[in-house]
Length: 128
Image 1 (cartoon, rainbow, N blue to C red):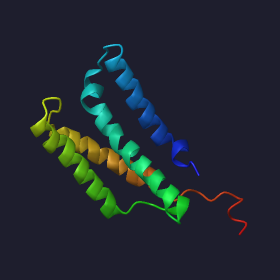
Image 2: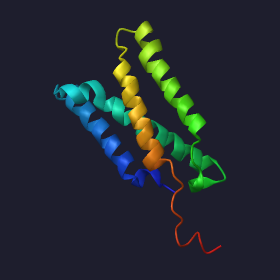
Image 3: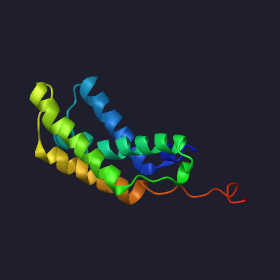
Image 4: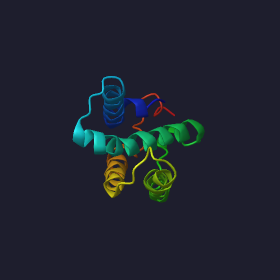
């Protein structure tokens, strides 16, 4: 029941995020476009993917559970408000950038189209 961790989009987004963090924080290497928008593009497939996996572990529907569009829109709005309005107003560490919201939106569309699907049934589970 670890379907998410086998999803190539989740794997790619997670690795891209961690490689970028390592390059920036450990080696001081900054790739300009990716530094500005890469993590924002990868964030929503990773965040929504992790949320979906945790919900599947707890919900009786298990791997057949998907996140509703309403839940996804609320999550996208919450993420955008926190990271592009609230934190920049209260911390110099964060900078508001409307293009980040666009990146969150694109990442959300990727999650909706390619990740928010019931897991395929294994042959063992179809026996019942």
